[in-house]
Length: 600
Image 1 (cartoon, rainbow, N blue to C red):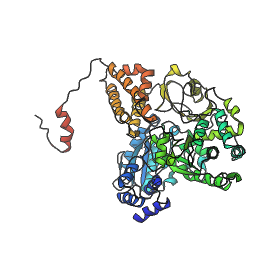
Image 2 (image 1 turned 135 degrees about the vertical axis):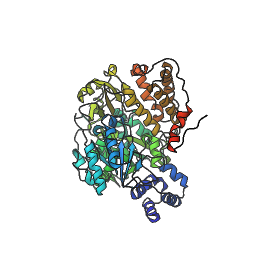
Image 3 (image 1 turned 180 degrees about the horizontal axis):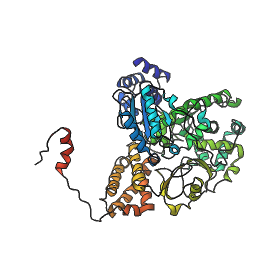
Image 4 (image 1 turned 30 degrees about the vertical axis):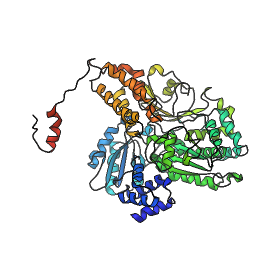
């Protein structure tokens, strides 16, 4: 084992900043990260074993114990639950003979839950040894388990490939892109790869930045910070070296648009990265790709190599003297908080994905403490079309404050879930009609960190000045128990995904969940509803990153928009007083050890 681990470390030049890659490769080799491997890593990288452990313990897909020859991660997000996830989980347990969270005695199969794998448009879905399996049914589960027992390769169990590039021999995935149901006016426009970059290098770096500023392109990740302004800040920061990072860690439950952009038009995104690299005079670009999309890595690496071969990437790009820029892919390992740009940078440096205190901002001191621009997949893909068609063309689309289009990931209780590119300014009602949604109780805008709205707000428009969203739009039908099926799931999600650094996020989320459960169980009062709301408001001002600041949003926005559902849970306004029953408390433990309770 030691020799193999040392060889893996050597592939990354004994660089402790590449600890994530080292751990990923070791996990792939041994199906876990054994204690011996931790000791070898610490010794060879000259770091403490505690530092190695604190990184690997932070990420969902790292483990110190074997997870089975066949490792099943079944999505347990809200939409997965809507589409019958519980039946699929029971089918796996019945066929394999173990519960979720455990591995069979012979080490053949491990069953585990995971929060979101970017497949909300084709749930129930699971990752099996990193390969996605979608639209699962009980019969499909039986076929898969039979394959496990027969020792089949996971890739050979995929069957029919999905649409678009999913059927490409470099991917061979059953995933469907479900895109371009509505042809967009920007991203979906055809173009010749390299044409935008050729135009960009014929003007100055400052002129490219000014084009982005004039276009009013705002970041498509949700926060909406002007892209051109971010580029300008980085260029003027005066660092020794600048970095450009593409954030492809779309971990917001309900978001899967980047999956489709990465699959169907990666050249456009990479070209946008190169243009951004040119504009900020960056030396290196990094695509931070979420672990759930590992099945796309070989394909994306191939696209990058073709760009190098075509002189669109690497040294002296397009024969421009001094324009040297290359891109590498950095895999994540399962952590929602790494979608926050400073946490993502910490992860890139081989550390826990804990958000940094700001200022300084990444454009001042980011990756390796150098100026760093972080944009997401959709933002960088849009850059290409702005360069080709002009800032004025782009500004003429959308609204005054929200120029251009938005790529939406729409899922849930609708006839046609999928990815849609729409012009900013479309109303929620228009969106619902577009996807064939009827009998709608609510729409979860921007995932659990966003807002849950009711029909009285469906006339609002999707725009930064009205309803801002990073892309996730989940339709919730009238037959759903909004509080129990949706809100409770989201509260638990935020508790699981908190990095634990800030006390309110670490502790208050649990307190809010307990009070919420008190209401669900019929013991709450009107005062409890008011306290849920006031305590939740505190979360917005007492945490340093977006996860902590929005962790109470599932409660806050449903109290604001669906308060009668909460009030209907209140049976009496008398404060509930619990009664402790010692006999009841020790009953289970006594039964377990075959004792008769003896309480006096």
